[in-house]
Length: 634
Ligand code: OXD
Ligand code: MN
Image (cartoon, rainbow, N blue to C red; front, top):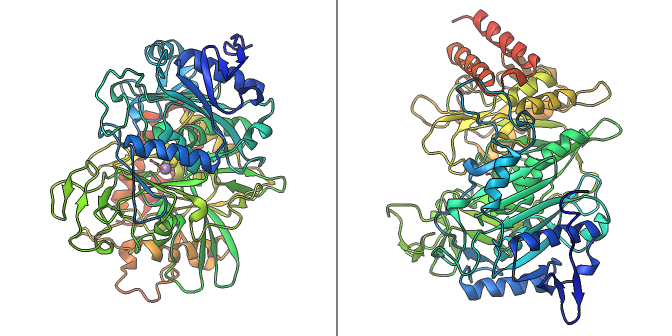
């Protein structure tokens, strides 16, 4: 019996139900599955909320919560649209806090790799169970005093799909409840599907018990000094304290669907990845699904909803951020989007860069830390041409703003939260419990120099190496300033739930003779010329690269040539019709000394960061790459 199951709780059903002395404000505690009752009772005893609210996901619940948040001033109605709201957070709570995010296991090396002595590890942070207990004991006891505790039943993936998983989140934030309703499937059907099985336990608190100890800014209670997000993969549990912001508080997303799910996936033989899933139908009416992993803020949402510039192609979106994939009995990899909404970076999104995203959030959406126009609209950098000229704008901090002002109108990590079902090109099978068959996996990053527009791995293992070597220019979401290139292996650096070396081995082990292994590619839309100008137009023109990828998936060997980094397109095999001034030679060149340096740097990174946990084939392939470049003419 676990510590939680041993707890004794009493339910009194006289006037209102009570757990201990805490009244149940909504819902029927008696009808919850047994293990959920135990979990909730434990949370009540620990957090001491003033009441318990068991969520049912219906519209009346949303109306009630929105009404409360409007009254309090946390949300403002954006009157230009239907049921759209603006939320300004405390300016100290605007992004994921990687430095306070930990994985807790008995054995350190289950969580993180053996790094070289004197090197600080960047692939996840481990905290011992003892230190974790000490930290959490300073935070959680009584942390919900004077606040309601919301109990949120949610399914990641279609309710009841064999690929889906169930979580229960308790939170004292009704903003979090509202967003969880969009980003996951919140419904009492979850209780039925769950029965007596286990679920992922998610405990979230703003860390602001009443009476509040710190000044609350923007009606956004939080506790930035004490933020802590801890994952217990062995217990399938997450505890998050002090932040109400997206990735820290919507625990179904990064915490569950990536960090905890990557561990479940390893144990059960599947994959939980930071990948979009999209469908491409060719002019010959053949449909393919691909999954693609790019580091945060590299345009996954834009690619997932691409508006193709080549005639005859059709794109449909399955998901924009996370893919759960499993080989079926016939050896075909099938993927689902475990999420139900988009939590996208707002700045840069407009009718040119991503019309389908724009159309997804014209109603029923929440905008966090964007600017507001005087006519009740949203505004952010990138919307200048789509906003009435001269209109009054209030920035994300609540101050008047006009073009040319110092400072940004919207926070660079400001977000839209929109139901995926509202995307005009959402795939009819996006909720298919079987998932969709995946033909290709694509990695990518922002690589201004050296890296060609597209290349293909020589084998599955070589594809794993390509994923392990993903790097990108740093972004706002990654908490870093400046333009340095950072390693983000598999685009999972901030989201790894276990030892990255073991993760690479898990990927390698997925290859089996009776499986149709997807082909693996790497793309780079961001290469620049010597003047710093992009060599590739990107956005809708990326269909030209996808077209080449699909022809490779169909087995066209005439369009590729082998190089030390893999297969690249033979000159003239990417469809450039209607495009002018593309410098194919520069776009595809493989500068020998750049690649020698890059290969050695990647090797050093893996030696430093993954050390003895790195599967030996990875180093062997890197050595082969270095040798092949050494043999290339100057
Ligand atoms: C995200 C991220 O929010 O990757 O999706 O940071
Ligand atoms: Mn992401």
